[in-house]
Amino acid sequence: IFRESLSGLCSNMSGRKETVLDLAKFVDKGVQVKLTGGRQVTGTLKGYDQLLNLVLDAAVESVRDHDDPLKTTDQTRRLGLIVCRGTAVMLVSPTDGTEEIANPFVQPEAV
Image: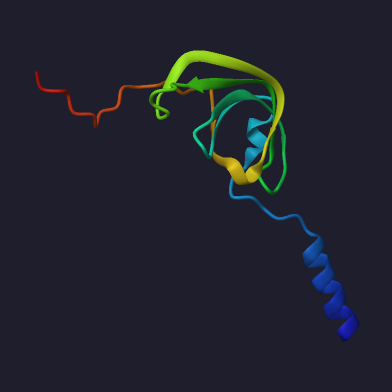
């Protein structure tokens, strides 16, 4: 009885953990990744693991404004092949089918 329960326990431990995100559908496609600290990277997802470590190819970082770190500028920096550590990943979204819109919650400034 002990041996059977031990083998069942070991088989459960050896199984891969499921991640909340199903990133398999984004492999070899363009993704945008937002990281803690405000960095934003766009590239082709080449691989990932259960800890959400991401491998991006042809990665490009959007450079942030020095005066206002909440704003991105039109400047970019080519990074090439990178690994995004899973603990720093906040958001993963596909680049296809998305477009940036104006913020509807910003109040126009009174003159």
